[in-house]
Image (cartoon, rainbow, N blue to C red; front, side, top):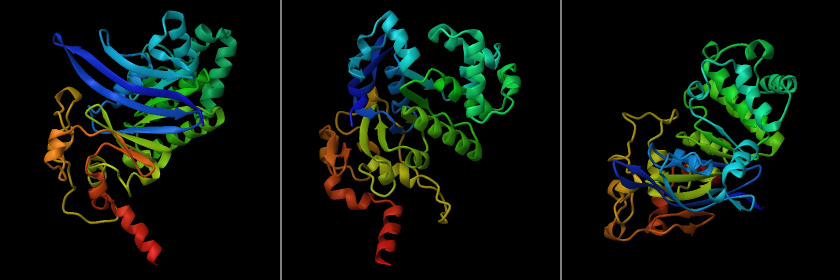
Length: 338
């Protein structure tokens, strides 16, 4: 399957207090039309910076190297009008905080129709008809009334639906979803995810989905990339994320999640604190927090290598893989034995 998005050796450094600090290091992946790729990791791992680089929304002064290929072209080479068309026609972004992303002093209808009028050349009447249809499609009843309202008059769940409607209004080929369900309750989260998946299937969009929720990534993403300190630690089929992690960091994240089927005195925690790319040691960036770390891990920087059907950035993965298998793997083995 031909890839729509191809990110190759993406490295980003930002100016901080007069010096450049690296936030992403040689990030590479590809994404085909109609597929969903998850990006997971702790805060500061580089998830949001990756999608902002893809949409050319990095802070002023940022240094970027590598390649961001989209349908055969390089996004980093786009200038002026070509970049505007790319953002208007090809890529849409769903931000984490809908209340912060939507202008609070403009009505919902204005927010939805502005891009259709300015970038698609639609008439005001046609744009309003399209916007009303989109609101109905994302499960917002009485669309005409909602379009006259201001953002503060809508709940968080309704505003996130508005964000999805705005994102798909221009029929983009790629949607960048930056934790679009973080502030929502579980029921609303499920409804919003269902809407996004339905829209994806109808329009055959590729979706790059950022989340802290490994369960959510496993449920909706075809594949998942785990980021740490601005590097790809592993890439695997999302169905294997919990049962067969390919890196100690992934296994630690899986072990730290609550399990409603088991009784524990306390939740497990990943020791230490997250490391930024510019703070990472010369060896494995996760070595200071890894219970499997050996001398070689602190001296040698591990490459990203094939492991089974995925990729792993771990020098010892071949010998420690059996110890990384999550509880879900044990359940599967018990079921096979029965």
